[in-house]
Image 1 (cartoon, helix red, strand yellow):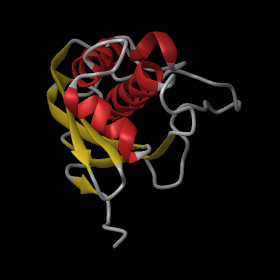
Image 2 (cartoon, rainbow, N blue to C red):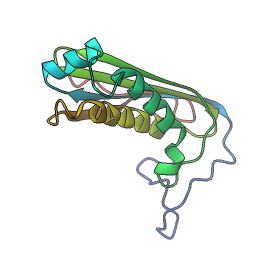
Image 3 (cartoon, rainbow, N blue to C red):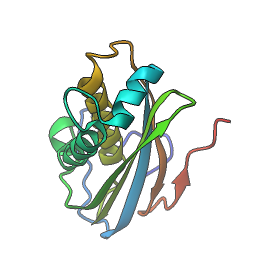
Image 4 (cartoon, helix red, strand yellow):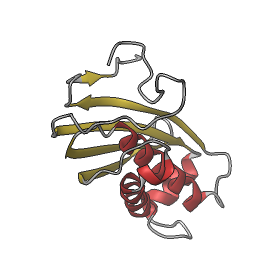
Amino acid sequence: MSEGRLTHIDATGAASMVDVSDKAATSRMAVAEGVVVMRPETLRLIREGDAKKGDVIGTARLAGIMAAKRTHELIPLCHPLLLTKVKIACEPDDALPGLRLTAEVRVQGQTGVEMEALTAVSVACLTVYDMVKAADRGMRIEGIRLLSKEGGKSGLWRAEDEA
Protein backbone atom coordinates (compact mmCIF):
# COMPACT_ATOMS: atom_id res chain seq x y z
CA MET A 1 0.00 0.00 0.00
CA SER A 2 1.41 3.38 -0.92
CA GLU A 3 1.14 6.14 1.67
CA GLY A 4 -1.95 8.30 1.20
CA ARG A 5 -3.79 5.79 -1.00
CA LEU A 6 -7.24 4.73 0.14
CA THR A 7 -7.27 0.95 0.20
CA HIS A 8 -11.06 0.54 0.06
CA ILE A 9 -11.41 2.42 -3.24
CA ASP A 10 -10.69 0.60 -6.51
CA ALA A 11 -9.17 2.05 -9.70
CA THR A 12 -12.60 3.27 -10.86
CA GLY A 13 -13.35 5.04 -7.57
CA ALA A 14 -15.87 2.45 -6.35
CA ALA A 15 -15.93 1.11 -2.80
CA SER A 16 -14.18 -2.25 -2.69
CA MET A 17 -13.25 -4.82 -0.07
CA VAL A 18 -9.47 -5.18 0.14
CA ASP A 19 -8.20 -8.50 -1.22
CA VAL A 20 -6.05 -10.03 1.53
CA SER A 21 -5.73 -13.47 -0.04
CA ASP A 22 -2.01 -13.01 -0.80
CA LYS A 23 -1.15 -11.73 2.68
CA ALA A 24 0.46 -14.03 5.22
CA ALA A 25 -1.46 -14.79 8.39
CA THR A 26 0.43 -13.12 11.23
CA SER A 27 -0.25 -12.25 14.84
CA ARG A 28 -2.00 -8.88 15.00
CA MET A 29 -3.19 -6.77 17.92
CA ALA A 30 -4.89 -3.41 18.42
CA VAL A 31 -5.78 -1.36 21.51
CA ALA A 32 -8.38 1.44 21.54
CA GLU A 33 -9.66 3.67 24.31
CA GLY A 34 -12.62 5.87 25.17
CA VAL A 35 -14.00 7.63 28.23
CA VAL A 36 -17.44 8.26 29.65
CA VAL A 37 -17.51 11.51 31.60
CA MET A 38 -20.25 11.74 34.23
CA ARG A 39 -21.23 13.40 37.47
CA PRO A 40 -19.37 12.19 40.58
CA GLU A 41 -22.68 10.86 41.95
CA THR A 42 -23.14 8.68 38.86
CA LEU A 43 -19.63 7.26 39.20
CA ARG A 44 -20.40 6.49 42.85
CA LEU A 45 -23.56 4.56 41.78
CA ILE A 46 -21.45 2.46 39.42
CA ARG A 47 -18.71 1.82 41.99
CA GLU A 48 -21.20 0.81 44.68
CA GLY A 49 -23.19 -1.42 42.32
CA ASP A 50 -26.37 0.60 42.87
CA ALA A 51 -27.32 1.25 39.24
CA LYS A 52 -30.95 0.20 38.67
CA LYS A 53 -30.05 -1.85 35.58
CA GLY A 54 -27.36 -3.87 37.40
CA ASP A 55 -23.62 -4.42 36.93
CA VAL A 56 -22.57 -1.54 34.67
CA ILE A 57 -18.94 -2.52 34.24
CA GLY A 58 -19.63 -6.23 33.68
CA THR A 59 -22.36 -5.49 31.17
CA ALA A 60 -20.18 -2.96 29.30
CA ARG A 61 -17.35 -5.51 29.18
CA LEU A 62 -19.63 -8.17 27.70
CA ALA A 63 -21.15 -5.72 25.19
CA GLY A 64 -17.68 -4.68 24.00
CA ILE A 65 -16.63 -8.29 23.47
CA MET A 66 -19.81 -9.06 21.54
CA ALA A 67 -19.39 -5.92 19.40
CA ALA A 68 -15.81 -6.79 18.45
CA LYS A 69 -16.98 -10.18 17.21
CA ARG A 70 -19.66 -8.54 15.02
CA THR A 71 -17.67 -5.62 13.60
CA HIS A 72 -17.85 -7.01 10.06
CA GLU A 73 -21.67 -6.83 10.30
CA LEU A 74 -21.57 -3.16 11.30
CA ILE A 75 -18.75 -1.60 9.28
CA PRO A 76 -19.00 -1.99 5.50
CA LEU A 77 -16.00 -3.66 3.84
CA CYS A 78 -14.56 -5.12 7.09
CA HIS A 79 -13.45 -8.72 6.84
CA PRO A 80 -15.04 -11.27 9.18
CA LEU A 81 -12.26 -12.40 11.52
CA LEU A 82 -11.76 -15.30 13.91
CA LEU A 83 -10.68 -13.22 16.89
CA THR A 84 -8.40 -14.98 19.36
CA LYS A 85 -8.76 -12.46 22.22
CA VAL A 86 -10.97 -9.53 23.17
CA LYS A 87 -10.29 -7.87 26.51
CA ILE A 88 -12.25 -4.88 27.78
CA ALA A 89 -10.92 -2.93 30.77
CA CYS A 90 -13.10 -0.39 32.54
CA GLU A 91 -11.43 1.74 35.20
CA PRO A 92 -13.07 4.41 37.36
CA ASP A 93 -11.26 7.75 37.08
CA ASP A 94 -12.11 10.41 39.67
CA ALA A 95 -10.23 13.06 37.67
CA LEU A 96 -12.75 12.85 34.78
CA PRO A 97 -14.97 11.99 36.72
CA GLY A 98 -16.08 8.85 34.93
CA LEU A 99 -14.89 5.60 33.43
CA ARG A 100 -11.87 5.02 31.21
CA LEU A 101 -12.37 2.04 28.90
CA THR A 102 -9.86 0.17 26.76
CA ALA A 103 -10.30 -2.67 24.31
CA GLU A 104 -7.52 -5.04 23.29
CA VAL A 105 -8.20 -7.31 20.34
CA ARG A 106 -5.98 -10.04 18.90
CA VAL A 107 -6.13 -12.26 15.83
CA GLN A 108 -3.91 -14.62 13.88
CA GLY A 109 -4.89 -13.47 10.43
CA GLN A 110 -4.35 -11.63 7.17
CA THR A 111 -5.71 -8.24 8.23
CA GLY A 112 -5.58 -6.03 11.29
CA VAL A 113 -8.06 -5.60 14.13
CA GLU A 114 -8.12 -1.82 14.56
CA MET A 115 -11.81 -1.58 13.62
CA GLU A 116 -12.68 -4.39 16.02
CA ALA A 117 -10.91 -2.61 18.91
CA LEU A 118 -12.55 0.73 18.06
CA THR A 119 -15.99 -0.89 17.73
CA ALA A 120 -15.56 -2.76 21.01
CA VAL A 121 -14.64 0.33 23.02
CA SER A 122 -17.38 2.42 21.35
CA VAL A 123 -20.11 -0.09 22.19
CA ALA A 124 -18.75 -0.56 25.72
CA CYS A 125 -18.97 3.23 26.23
CA LEU A 126 -22.50 3.32 24.79
CA THR A 127 -23.49 0.51 27.14
CA VAL A 128 -22.24 2.45 30.16
CA TYR A 129 -24.37 5.38 29.00
CA ASP A 130 -27.42 3.16 28.53
CA MET A 131 -27.03 1.51 31.93
CA VAL A 132 -26.99 4.79 33.92
CA LYS A 133 -28.70 7.34 31.66
CA ALA A 134 -31.68 7.50 34.05
CA ALA A 135 -29.33 8.95 36.67
CA ASP A 136 -27.27 11.20 34.37
CA ARG A 137 -28.41 12.07 30.84
CA GLY A 138 -25.61 14.65 30.56
CA MET A 139 -22.84 12.05 30.34
CA ARG A 140 -20.35 12.49 27.49
CA ILE A 141 -18.56 9.82 25.50
CA GLU A 142 -15.18 11.21 24.49
CA GLY A 143 -11.74 10.42 23.20
CA ILE A 144 -12.43 7.24 21.25
CA ARG A 145 -9.17 6.51 19.45
CA LEU A 146 -6.68 3.86 18.49
CA LEU A 147 -3.79 3.68 20.98
CA SER A 148 -1.67 1.07 19.26
CA LYS A 149 -1.55 -1.68 16.67
CA GLU A 150 0.96 -4.44 16.05
CA GLY A 151 1.59 -6.89 13.26
CA GLY A 152 1.23 -7.05 9.55
CA LYS A 153 3.36 -5.29 6.98
CA SER A 154 3.37 -1.94 8.81
CA GLY A 155 4.47 -3.45 12.14
CA LEU A 156 4.12 -1.47 15.37
CA TRP A 157 2.26 1.84 15.58
CA ARG A 158 1.53 3.84 18.74
CA ALA A 159 -0.49 7.01 19.19
CA GLU A 160 1.51 9.99 20.31
CA ASP A 161 0.69 11.24 23.78
CA GLU A 162 -1.35 14.41 23.72
CA ALA A 163 -0.06 15.59 27.10
